[in-house]
Structure formats: C-alpha cells, structure tokens
Length: 394
View 1 (tube, helix red, strand yellow):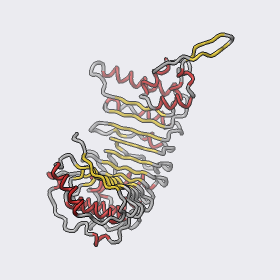
View 2 (spheres, one colour):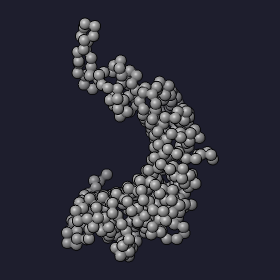
View 3 (cartoon, helix red, strand yellow):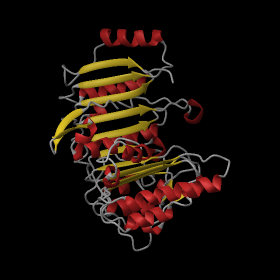
View 4 (spheres, helix red, strand yellow):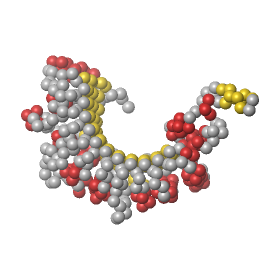
C-alpha cells in the first residue's frame, strides 16, 4: 500500500497524515470485505482509525485448510479460539457469513459457531462449503436462521426438525453435493414463496437427492415462480416421469423463468427430452446456457431419429430468448439440430455462442464452418451473432 503524506494544521502546528486514514468509512468497509478475514484483522496496525474497523465488517469469511500434522489438536483449538475471538469483538450487524472447510476435525467443531449465529436476527446470507467426501450434518440451530435471504450449501447433510417450515425470506437457494431427502427438498421449495434462484448440483453418487421418489412434474410445481434455474445432469437423469414418457410441457408453466443453466448428455435420450420439456414450458426465457457432457463408456452411442424435427416443435415459442451458449460442443448431428431448432424459434436472439470441446479436431472445426456457409439454416433472427470458438485444454 502506497502512503502519500498530507499536512493538516492542528493547534497551530502541522501534522502529517497518511492517505489511508482519510478514506471514508464506507470505502474502508468495502476494502475489508474484499480481503481474507485474517488479512482484514491485520489492518488494525495501519493506523489508529483502522484499528477497530474490521470489527464492524458486515461480512465474515473463514477459510479453514488442513492443519499441520504436528500438534494438530493444539492448532485446532487455537483456530477455534481465534474464530470466537473475532465474534466477541465484532460490534456491527453481521449480514453475511461464509466458511470454507477441508478438514474433518474442524468440521466437527462448527456447531457452536452456528449456534452463536442463530442468536442474531441479522444474517441474510449463509454460505458453507465443505470440500471433503464425507458431509457435515447441519445442527438444529442452523434452522433458526429465519432471516436468511441467500443460502448456499456444499457438502452438507440437511435434516431439519419436524416442525421446520422453511425459510420464508429466502430468495436464492443452492444445494451442491448435499445429502437430503426428496421430502425435505420439496419442503424447502414449498415454503420459499420469494425464491428467485435455485441451484441443484450433484457431482457423483456419494452425494444424492433421491429424485427417483419425485416426479419431474412434482418438483417443478414447486418452482413455478423461480427466475434462474441451474441443474446438473445427475439430477436430471434421476427424475421419474410418472412411470411414463417425459411430458411435452409441464402442467404448470415456468412463466417467470428467465435463465436456464444445465449440463446435459446428448447421448441420453431422456436427458434431451427433459431439456426440451423445460424449454417448451418456459415461454419467457432470455438465456439458455448448456454444458455438454460426453461419457461414451457410461452412456454408450445412441441414434435418435428426427429427435429435433422442426415439424414436431411448431408450437415452441422463444419470443424473448436473447442468448444461447453451449460449452463443450462436439459437433455431432443432433447437437447441431438442436442449435438449428433454437435459432429457428428465437426472433429476438442476439448471440449464439458455441464453445468447441478441445477434442474436436481442427479439420472438424473447418468442416463445421464450411457446412454453415454452404447450408445456411433458417433463423428467426437474421441479425443474431453466431460465434464458434475453441475451449482451451485443461
């Protein structure tokens, strides 16, 4: 940090003051919230004005990494003591609390911290990330945070008390690699009347929601007012469509849905029909973002005859769609047919961005460009910008 002295006159003498001491309180708080908590606390040595600024930070973020093998128990208690020391000295309203953990020993000691948080009515945002195979079971005190507006949980077991009626103020909800029953999931969604954004992400079978017990229709009946929806393919493939084929449209349309984000395997016919059902049921979509998943060993090769025949989707209307983005595009026939379908039904489309999978060869990429030039397909929006780019290798 650069110090630029300024002279001010006090009591007939000139005193030098550094620039950081003249910053407005709002700017200081903004700087502190962008810093790791450990560094924010260290700013107390910068000047007298900064000494206690961190104690009124509206956001606290703790990152707990692996403890050293030497004196692990001592380090654990020291870390927890430091965390509670921060809570004791904190004076202002705490609006946001985030904690990142990759240590099982520490995760088992988090309950008292959440109990302390539950005694305040100020918490608006709670984010918990446990980067481990085993999940952290949320204590009952967590469900007392009734002022929550934003909840983001990763690697948690969610098992609320019987009398829990959801978070009535919740606007955004994210379950990532959590263990939760379908009954609890539907309970959350049913009792969140203000919910605008919902994210459900599963990365493997060790973290699951038993969606086989929930039909596609039942879940989305609870999401009729959501504006942003993000789902992983491990969620999509587990839906039971009432024991029959996926419906062409949902009985309750998603009229408020503006942004749809999915990862989907185009080798799985059921997943494609789930995608089409969501698009057909969302007349006011403004953005579709898809990440293609290709697992030939798991999914196998399949042939879909006329899966995207335009004659089968004459009733599809995307009058508000402005952006289509597809990541990890392999340039197989039914992928391009899907792109053609969307572009033929989107009169106000501004941008269609295709990001090619790194495994697509340069020759295939050139052929793709040539085919687009030689065989132009119908576009409802002739001015839509069509961009094809290559993803970098990891």
